[in-house]
Image (tube, rainbow, N blue to C red; front, top):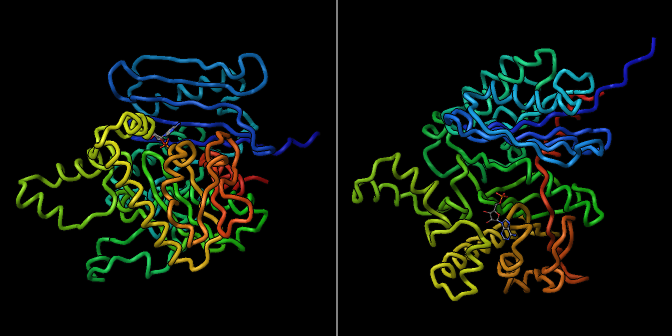
Length: 409
Ligand code: AMP
């Protein structure tokens, strides 16, 4: 009898409230076999599934789309499984080693990726009050995948895990300790998978071990967060109890005086839910100028639009404050790394964020900054005291890597 080769494939699932994003990776070489997205789950007949097999075989790289009703996550995952099966990549494949799930909130409990069992599910459920939008959808994704392949390891990879190394001085708010503990009010941080991946990739770009470098990671997407990473471990991050704290984002305000909330309630007559929506959905760049896409904001600035210019200036001012703060937290900074949609693509944001920080050893070379590329690269001039880098993030690869490290033979 010939021994079966060990399974090397990992399916990564990112289940949102009305969407499922997925990627199938082969961890023998980190290659991607398929990728896709189901959107508008539960919304009558308008759901859409877009699936792209990425192999070199027949149909590789050509997307297939399907539109119609998808009532719930179970139906969505079954449809994904069907699409994968068409390419010979079905969930029943013996080559599938595990399913890795993105879980937004792991609280203080989960400091590492974890193989899911009943007690893990119960703990993720217990954390719903601190992540009411995300954890329920993540749980549904895990439960559905478990029902489809009960024998397969399901691994939860938490967005908060990388930040659990923050010292109490950074993780605690300065409020009454008993009240904070009773309601689990503390700073958890998010985008941890990205901060972990990018800080390691930055060390690699510098030709150093993660333990030997201090990095400020700026994850600037529609959601945005900064982190201070000392020797591979997070020591501070800008998001807090929820993703609302910190930088100016596409639709979130980031930092402000908490008393703004009392004021809007008492004087403005707004309900807590209205204020929640205002600060999470109608603030940040969209609240300031009506657009949250940095491309559009730059286009308007080029046309002389003052409102867009002010939104940009507020965004940059906050970003600069965090660079300065994390410089002070770390004491010595080896690199500042820009990542995610804005960080990877918007050269004017990178240039403006470090403008005037020459005294801190931070500068960008305009020529290097203007280059568009998919690889991690330095944009600071040769010999600069602090490296400034663009490091494309890859959360799916990181989730697959962490999952496979836990279950792969
Ligand atoms: P993410 O959340 O990482 O997918 O980032 C999405 C955001 O990236 C968009 O809302 C845009 O503001 C920004 N973005 C994407 N592509 C570009 C680009 N080519 N130039 C400037 N900003 C971009």
